Amino acid sequence: MKRFLSLVLVFLFAALCLPISVMADTPAFSDVPEDAYYAEAVAWAVNKEITTGTGNGKFSPATSCNRAQAVTFLWRAAGSPEPGSDIMSFNDVSEDAYYYKAVLWAVEAGVTAGTGNGSFSPVTNCNRAQIVTFLWRAMGTPEAEGENPFADVNENAYYLKAVLWAVENSITTGTGNKSFSPAMNCNRAQIVTFLYRCFKEAPHEHSFGEWEITLPSSCLTEGIRTRSCECGETETTAIPVTDHSFGNWEETLAPTYDTEGVEVRVCGVCGTAEERALPLLVPDPFVIISNPEAVDANIGDTVTFKFETAGGKPSVSYQWQIKYGADSDFTDIFGANDSEYSFTANEEHRKNNAEFRCVAADTKGGILISETVFVSFPLWFGYEDKVIDIEPNGNSVLNADAMGGSAPYTYEWEVYDCTGGEWISVSTIERFEFGESDADSFTVTVSGCIAEYYDTFRCKVTDSNGDFAYSPETKFLLTGLAFANDLPDEIRVTDVREDVYLYIKLASDFGIPPYTYKIEYYSDRRNKWSTIKIETKDSYTMNETFLSDKEDRDYNGRYRITVTDSSGNKIVSNEVSVIFS
Figure 1: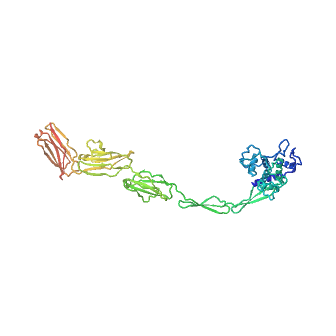
Figure 2: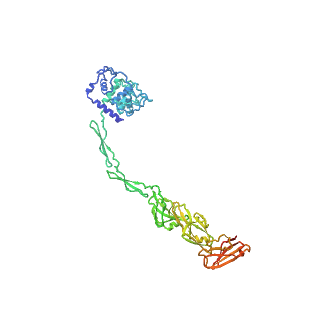
Figure 3: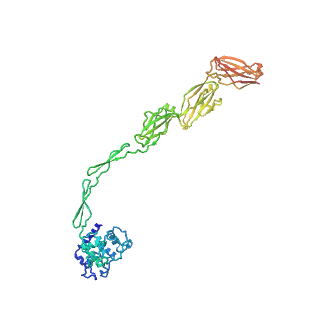
């Protein structure tokens, strides 16, 4: 506030220094005699635009001056400065009042605080105590050293210091008889005279301009700033030492996942260095990017699986594992320690349905396990061609045992036709009933007839892609005597002179020759079997005609052939009924 008031005083002092001719140009008022004690003060006030009179060429010196007018005169004497705030603290000062800005300024400058209860009382007359106090405050409330010359100014009066200051600075000498008359209302002539005496004698205070830096400060030395008055006086002050002028941070040691890094910055003026730690690297989440995929391959092909991960704390290790069969456990593959694993597909992989997977681990303890993957081989079978020894009319279950390819499979069982020299579907042969077929399994009943003509079987397996393969062949060998054909169920003889013809054949390669063929006849009348003919030979076949006794022609009978080899193996044919008509 003191600086503000000092500036006011400087402004007023400069005004007082104007040439006298300016005063001479001031218009005269008809009610202000030239010899009046206040004539010079009125001329000064008009020249400073503090007042223009009351109109019609009059100043009205004897008219009482209220608080609004007194503050306005004082504000104008200060150069009509703009208030710092437009917020009015008094409820009796309207925004459109001519004295609005003057009151705002007076409050900010500490000239007045109002009359209490939020009021300024603008129309209340201003007395001598108030105007002297306004002036004293406007001048910065300076101390006065003189004694109180007035009997009517109490030692504890709020205006005591103001009155003492006014007397000391020849602004007032009182009203006579050791009286100051503090409660006496001031008229316009007195108010203007007080202002004139106050500001006319105001000492010069330097009006310094803005501070200018004449020597910049640094982190090593203080700087200097200077300001000048219009009179040529200068004032200097020190600028404190500045902080260091650091450059940008530069990394000197990169952080890792286990150790902090370091970055440094250097002052460009003094070279002082400052460093700070860089935080540890934080690994990204450890996740699977892609799993290995199953591949189609043949034995001997190179197969490559790939397991891709991201994130985790470096370095990430990989371990490929293998498992043979559903009931076994995964075991590590020696040397398979990369995200990619290449190997040669072999019979062991195919035979044991090998499964593969990869386990990835980072150094923070994170574990990722890939999906299980396998090598898909073309259709193949888990056995080779085989020969099975079987007793005549024995049963054997054949299994296709197909693997590889793409499920589901379809199955078609075939048998080799020895007479035609070709493979044919068992379902197309009506002559024999081979057994029951149930998809991938086939139950065969091996009779002598089947063994003679259809002794070898296989299965055609087709997968869902349309690819097919033939299973290994299975051949049956009878372990005892067996017939390659059956006798007819019935023979009708219509001519008594007609021969009865019987043909029987042993299945090849069975029994030990020579063979004894015996034709037997069963008479219903005699209720027993009787031998008609016996013949021993090395041949697998017996092709005989015979003529029954005349006596036997009168009776129907059943016939059969019994064959015995040299080791005692014996086989009896089916029965044929011979009917004479």
